[in-house]
Amino acid sequence: MAIGDMVTVDKYYGQVTRINTRYTILRGLDGVESVIPNELFVSGPMQNFSLSDRLLRLSTKVTVSYETDIEALLPLLEEAAATVARVSKDSPPSAVLRFFAADGLEVEVGFMIVDPENGTFGVTSEVNLAIWRVLQSNHIRIPYNQREIRILNASSLPADIPPAGEEVAPPSVGEAR
Image 1: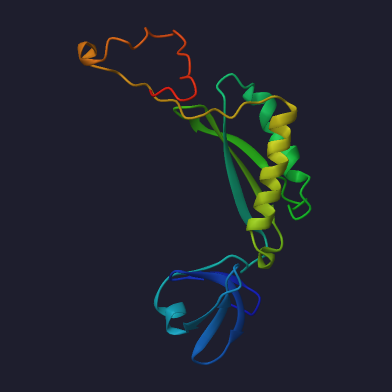
Image 2: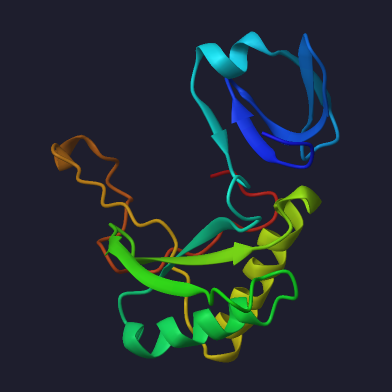
């Protein structure tokens, strides 16, 4: 571990800014500095995100409609993520179909950054905005959650409920529902 490394130890994540004989200071991505006793680094697991290189993998997910041509969409999402300045050009983004969700197809876009010390929220937001623009320009729908409600005892419902599929007019101003 060295000054400048991005590490996680116990519940703390951040950049190592100072190391001395008793403690190490981590500066979190939110700017908060934590004083960590060095015994935590040797007595438990520690993740060093920059031990061999500065690359850090991030990802974002989006759910799209089942009507989406997913094979056409995946390369578009990779290209969108690649347009973000902080995304590594040496390790291009990858988009994959994660699974078939209840409301649509869940896609994950993974990308690498070379400067994790500059934070992750901003770059993730930029990638999300690039993805949003691709979805909008290609008329790809993000589905709303869909739930089916079953009424087991329909005879207990009020008689003035219209049959399924029939439009209900909104109440007039001043009229109670």
